[in-house]
Image 1 (cartoon, rainbow, N blue to C red):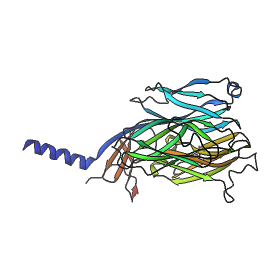
Image 2 (tube, rainbow, N blue to C red):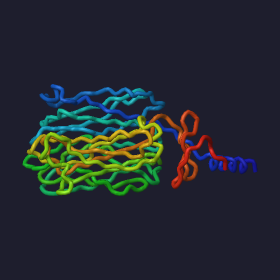
Image 3 (cartoon, rainbow, N blue to C red):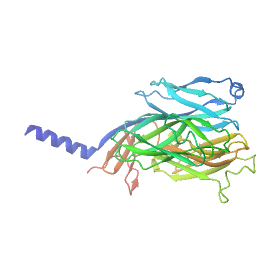
Image 4 (cartoon, rainbow, N blue to C red):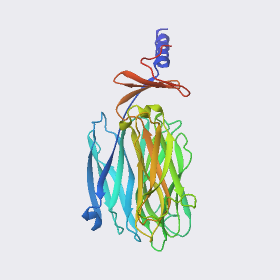
Length: 358
């Protein structure tokens, strides 16, 4: 009888208070590769590390995700580059850059996202030439399917991906092309398709996958082809930035402290003319301001690059300071310094000063 009473009390407590969820998120940018002399006149292979110090100490060692916001490489040569993470601690980590050439890469801007969050999983998958038998040879439009698996604790996961390394052979190919096409995620896996075309041979591909079941996290991928209606990729005006914008509404919690929002975006696909000019790709986001509930992603090119397709992926999370999130049924309540700042439901939104009593 005593055991039954205890069990009943626990059940009532969870129904009344929900469950507590704690997360820490931080993000930043590394500009180590920015037209310095050693990148303009390199000696291959080139390997170096960039040390990143977190603005705030983590309570536990976080997972770290990399993505490329900006990259440039010289025309008409094979591209072979890679970035990866090492030595993660409570205070920081190292970004490792490896460039094998022969294409010169004078610009490579890397955004990082560090996460201590039980509802997030980050995977790096390196697809080798033995795996990419359809893409590493042949001619014309080609694709190859894979599947990624993750923990089954995600009933409705959000998944996105970023290209963080590639070995592309472009001899006799008019286009340097690679693209990620993601399927519909299930509770424990998702289908992934890689595509290329012409004589572009994808001999290696390093992909960073982000999987989350966090209610507050938003992810996605967008892309655009060149067309008569969409000429932002045209290089007729080489003095301007030619970019495409994508906007989406976000929950109002993103407007509480917009300076601390996690707005992370990176390259996940491109199709560039190999010989028309150097390849230059850039992804960024417009700053959110107070009371703004719109996230705007900007992606495109400039200069003499002839870009016929570009794809970008993004991850959004509200203020990355260590908040406590309380979930109760379909309602969620956000507290800061033990004070409740916002309570929202699926169809109703309101600010309150204290928890509503049942």
